[in-house]
Length: 90
Image (cartoon, rainbow, N blue to C red; front, side, top):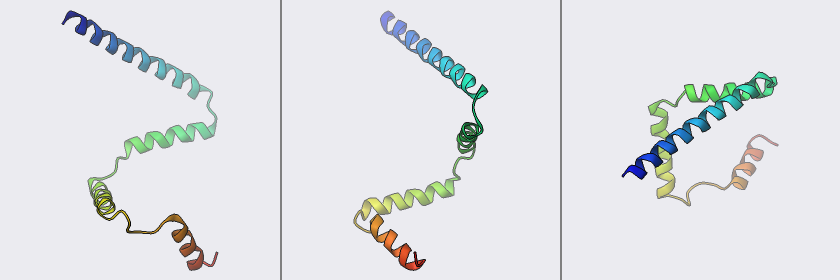
């Protein structure tokens, strides 16, 4: 039991160090990042902050369920692409 406890402490400390190292690396990178990279970071942050509402998740769950129950229903990409080309005269 003592060895398991030591291993758990080691793993936890390792994870903490990896997290600190990652944060340090990102902070150094951000200090010199160009506008494109800052926009990418900002988009990631916004995505994390703006979680999908439950109603949207429910719709997605329904669509996934329908697809699993009817895997051959629908169109492949070529059919969709051709349909759009015809519809919009492309």
